[in-house]
Length: 276
Image 1: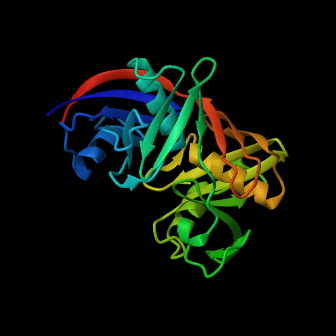
Image 2: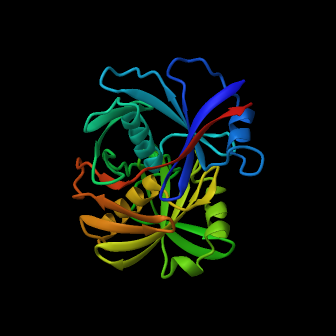
């Protein structure tokens, strides 16, 4: 099968975009993993598979598949790339609506390659994350290899645990991240963010993602970190989140029904056809 694709990235979080809105391709988990392999395939953190929308407001529906072939619910950097992909095809004029799961997201285009996204309302209820605890708390305890940790938890369309650290550069992101992911507290797995607050309007973040390991940037992870930081009272309503691949602007007023906004770039790399 000859499969056309576009390679894109959001702050180094890279994607293979496949337009399957006509339904012609049926890819297995093994084939998705082959596409994601960096030495034997195209190489990416996630595959973004566009499908025909179910909601009349949306231009496209899309699914997120991790590099190992496992499914993911959402991707903040990915949705910006989908928007720019549709704009490139002439299917978005100033903005576009994209569908994923049971939700639709409105996106607008800013200067250069920037895309601004309505990321919806953060979900802190344990059942919505999901998190296997009896009651919601601002901080949850967890012991990893004899070390006592605390984390905040939130869903931004996918599950996130956020851990406050003094220095992201000296933190064992892979070791702690994998251990947190293995915890029975997270029945659907979890993305683990390590947050260092530099000022109320600026923070550094590294994220260890499900099915991909540490990525250069995680859009939903940045949203989750600000949502948790706001609950903890350490971050302002507008925060520059510095990731290894660049910066995102996250805005959240902090109220129970307030929408969280994310602004950041989406970049084309190349396009091609792969035999799979």
